[in-house]
Length: 127
Image 1 (cartoon, helix red, strand yellow):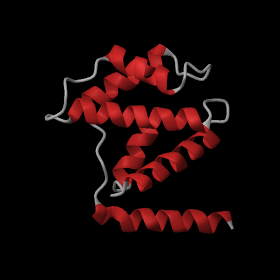
Image 2: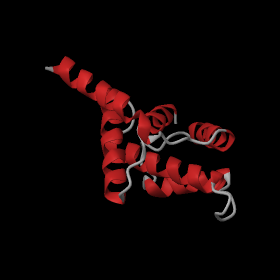
Image 3: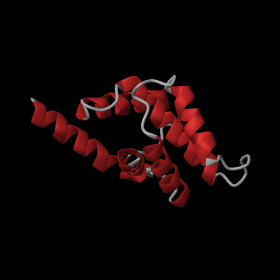
């Protein structure tokens, strides 16, 4: 959940669902590229979705009863279709514990200039 926390604190959440999905897809692809021995982009995407669902569920005071660790682990297994790339139960337990103890905060729109500057710098370096 560390890379997700980094992204979510630096980039304000998009307002449209389609843009949220695009952001998650781009993140998952890059995460899979950076971790070639790990999980593929589809599994990474499903984990991102699961972690954000968990975060919203645990930290939304007006929401339903908080998700249990077992429910989270079952949701992840279902989302990844019990793939061989499913993270180990101990990894999922650690993610659950961290998200439960510390909410994943979303970035503020006034920090967008720094993010855009970083993106431009990164693009320039690749040329």
